[in-house]
Image (cartoon, rainbow, N blue to C red):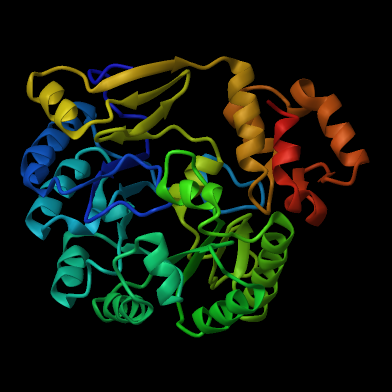
Length: 406
């Protein structure tokens, strides 16, 4: 992919902000601590990259009405600022980024999300500034309500600060707030997790994303677990924790729409809840999306690309007028079909025949007829004239199902 290719046909944009106060013990993302002195130069380079993506025309067609056949065209345009810790940026730098992004995806019609660390957004003025700049969705990385566990993870906030940040975001006018949590944490018991679930459903958040802890080899937490200094729950216990989440969120009225995501809804008949994250839906529907920033991954079929990882390398390349793209992967029609299946099956509504045909240009059975028949026989998926979706049993062992399409 070349930066000379405008993004006229792309409705989704990811922007990577790699700065952190300190790296969390479990984090394997492209993030850097103690590099705040590079922020202004980084934002200058980032805005230059965004301008190179800007289409000749920024008109974005409105989404089609939501139906059970859920396709890419039904999603809102989206901008997602992830990291790292985007909320470390001063609002003046955030304004420059969003102004440049607006030339690609118009802010006034988009879902605009900023990831925030609760330890960095305790000032309501900052949150109000984000809201005034066009940000309409906040994602708070709470992860745990157990302060000792937060310290083990290397998080810089407390449970009380997380709750304060949530309330401040609501007071600043945010009507769509996501809370991220991790389960299967060091020393965590099912009882502790249930206590957390009972607490968080009382906050009134609009969306929850819950993920089982993954031990990445290059992280301090992995080394601590391997050495025996820290213990984590086994797979059976984390499975029980997941089932607890299913029960608590259902009882509290949240709608699960993806394996790890729940949201409030104003329309129970909609295939996805009102407060679902449309940017993540774009990933699960295997839509094309642009990406900008150090280490950012983008996807425009028939290519996937990734930018250079280092902040200084990224700044140097863009400042010299060079493309920051470090690697391009060519995708085949079979790759497209496989990714459309295993990403879409994460959704509770599954993969509709209409969506598969729209994205891949062929019928689902023509590509995966044997795999679908086998998985249905095993009780892991259910198929009908509308499409295919995981059963409850299939959802518990989803990765085994997804492997059949690779």
